[in-house]
Length: 482
Image (cartoon, rainbow, N blue to C red; front, side, top):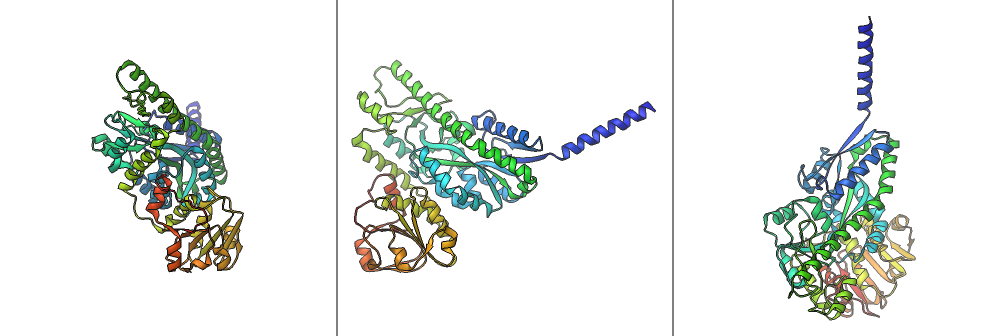
């Protein structure tokens, strides 16, 4: 009898334990980050916090080190329902929401302050892009600013950029990683902390520039189907943890990235002190864990070197145009794919930043049927840099969508900045001096307008963003034609 009771109790406990285990939800996520890296240490801590906040009901199971393929392959698994989500860089995010490819442009941001303003302004828009693809964008992440790395020592920034030309415009995908690991890539652009995190590129770089070539965005996403497995309370708890941890992770990774740079500089200085006859402030060979930074080849002019490093420039003031010219030449040697219509709102905002005069207070949005979403995206993108007080709208439902006011075509064209998402005809007489127009649809420009306006295409705006050209001229009409 006692044996029977004991067996019955054991069965009840076993069944109870299985029932408790059945209530647990395990989300299988993929990442390229390797075990033991700073990224994985923090991501696992985030997962433990989520488990604690959901009373052990939600667990994040990470498949690390690219075991499921590169980010494009993992994004495809998410879309097919074979993977519950992942921690992705720009490559995986753009594979899920192609609009995210706009973050890849060099010179888009100069510092983290600009990055924070951009992500805050575009947060709702970006979440909407993923939501339309049945993906939940849970939180922003920082991979940091990409610096140019080289396999062999170099003496000047120009030399590094020329050497990196075939690989500068490449996305951070598996092909680039394979070419770095295989020795094909001679120089490339990548965030320092990211290089350490993915592992495959470690030990291949001997030097690194101090130039912030471009910003690399990241994020945590979940498949909509996987997210739906959570109760409303669990979803709220996970979202709350992500909101709380987002600034902590971004701040920590930024500091770690700066620490990597500082460590490289210290090691380089020590080697230069030991190596007599080597030009001060020029280059230094790096240890495997921290590539050295490229300072200024000042040939002994320490004051110039200190000023250059403080301004994150590797040249004295007189050499800045030459350095920027080298950067643009390298960046445009292998330009990104032709601008797609879905990227035009962001491209228009970048053009406005370099072509608009003064502090624009009014923004005109002109949209045809079917382009209302694109016009709304233009407003969101412009708010990264501008705070227009008067938003004038031409288009059915556009004013209600953006919170602007409905006006006629003439009043919209009289704004400081005008974004045209409709195939209309534009004459010089309709515009006032100082207006900037983003022509983001097949509009017709009259001969007088073409004669008096400063016209810029995407390549020219890229040169302006890098400082090769000055696009701002007072009392002029400027047009960006996508």
